[in-house]
Image: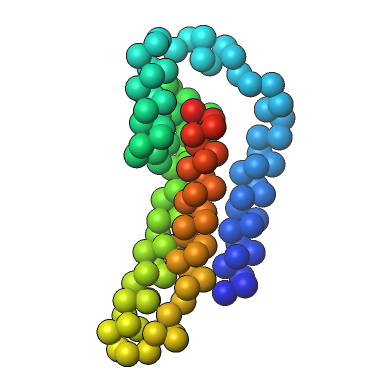
Length: 120
């Protein structure tokens, strides 16, 4: 379990460190967007997310792939943890439920979602 949390921390550090040189926002990328791309990309970046807003805005290769990978991985971790809880719940042993995976999945998804909304 501790290896899993360590892996998530390393992945977050890698993606955050990868953009440390982005101190100034890339204004030229938003200047090239039409108002429709900007607006529709913003809405799709908020809901459903997963990098779709960046796809519409033509910025997926720059930073959108991070949100696609991060939010997808978080949902997978959440699903694995929830499946274990459901399985153990049917077997009558709720103490064996791995709440850590569920918590990590929710935490990861919320972190990536907030980052995506700010970035979009």
